[in-house]
Length: 174
Image 1: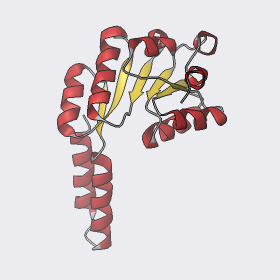
Image 2: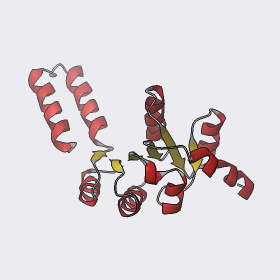
Image 3: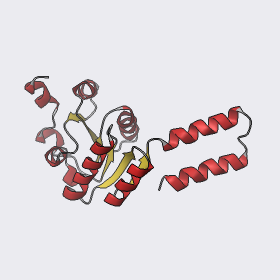
Image 4: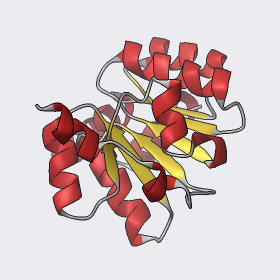
């Protein structure tokens, strides 16, 4: 990708100066796209960041406010108004990137609430210790949904199973 292309996909002050009380979505992949769509449909102000130029380019073609940049960089976070944001949703592809981004938010923008996708429960515990407001292990909900579908298929999804699945979801989702 050429430098001019990257610059055109990066946030500039005129685009982000008026952002305030918004959400920052770090990662515009499968999960970030769904979150951005739901927030937009509910008129919740948000802006996205991603390091994949194809994802950013596609979003820009559809007038979705997603910018090219590393969400783990304090300078990039400042460029999308992190100092004025109310919260961040961190849903990057790797545990390390999620942790680094959450750490940079906590260090540089401590008033921003953090909602983070965790790789697994152990990663979730680390993010919680760091100070994330909500941590959701990426394996939790699909596991419970699949277990529920299997129990329903074999005819054993009764009130006790539904209660147990709900209790597990509650207990593990912090």
